[in-house]
Length: 85
Image (tube, rainbow, N blue to C red; front, side, top):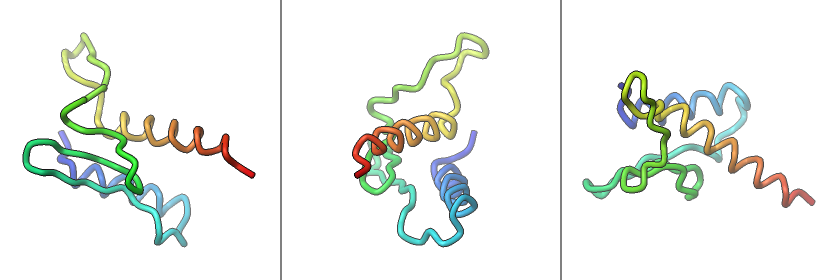
């Protein structure tokens, strides 16, 4: 399993690959040592306290955190499209 910083690095690399000129937007990781949080520009996409990832019966684990963050990020971007002027 990847650690949180590896996941953030992967996500930020994906953003850079999609838009090489992107220097303003990035995913972030923070913790108060009790709760871990992954966000995008101050929008929390996941936290360890309210982990909403799907439970997979086989192989008895949660869905990948990296995939979950991608899915939540894409939902967030789709929601923003509603406000396009």
